[in-house]
Amino acid sequence: MNEETLIYNTPCSEEILRQINQYEFKRLWENNLTKNNKNLLSGIISILIAIIFFIAEDYGFSGLFAGFGITTCINYASYYSSYRKKKKKFQEIIEKEILNLKANPKDTIWEFTPTNFSFKNYKSEYKFIWQEITYCILDDKYLYITASSFLNFILDKANIDEINLNKTIQYLESKSQFKKI
Image 1 (spheres, rainbow, N blue to C red):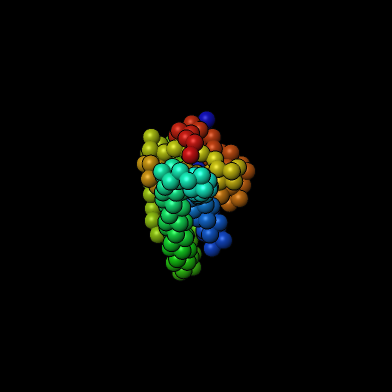
Image 2 (cartoon, helix red, strand yellow):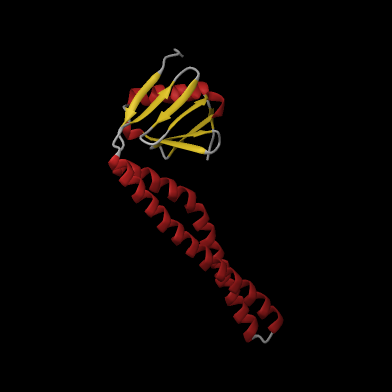
């Protein structure tokens, strides 16, 4: 591969910011919510088994299953409440970020060089060596770049043309590691 430097701007817009952040929130919480719904189902089944044992006058097993079922249902309610609070807080953060974006409407600059990856938007600038970078493609819609295992950069494929996208993917293939998430 030719060791060229890729630099391009992507627009910062309210729509893109919302779309990417809502996708990320959903991706992070979806598996947990699915597991929590399965736990609720097992709790309800346990309560039904407890009722059957209670009708059969086997109070020991009835109490055991009732305790398990009630505990599971309480855990479900607690987790769901936590999810709703986090979602509300997340929406507040997004609204604040959109206000900041409107006050500073600068494009995001993506730079891929032979030695590093850099990212610059209206509030921060990052530069990482290639050994710190992993990437993956999410839902054939986003290019998900992770730096130093704690910073995530999401590039919506709709923001760049096909040629630059292919060059970027080739760059990532040759310089960083592919990692499923």
